[in-house]
Length: 112
Image (cartoon, rainbow, N blue to C red; front, side, top):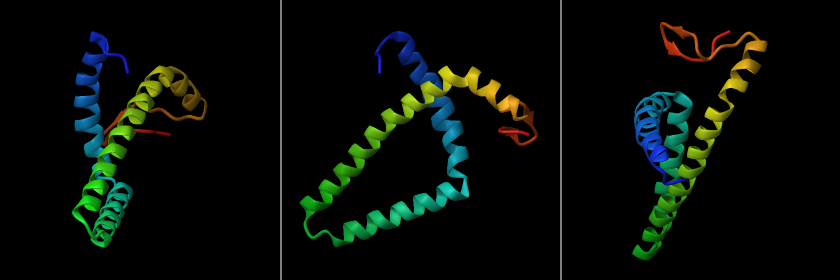
């Protein structure tokens, strides 16, 4: 990603505040996410328990860190693409009677 001032500001405001605070907290409360997180935690613990040396365990930790780092770039590009496409997406959803900008008592979401 670009290192210009606008990009840095966008990252600090949008990603730090909107994604990391709001979106992640909503995601973390989702039962499907919680189940996936639990499965991941269990699988990693099981894998770590099968490793016999500290070097293998460190490699697993390094792999997990690298995987998360790599995936964060994909998520950033996905979010930015969603912003670029948002006007078109809103129009397409409206054709089918859906809105993602109407506010309800439960907050913003997909409404029919």
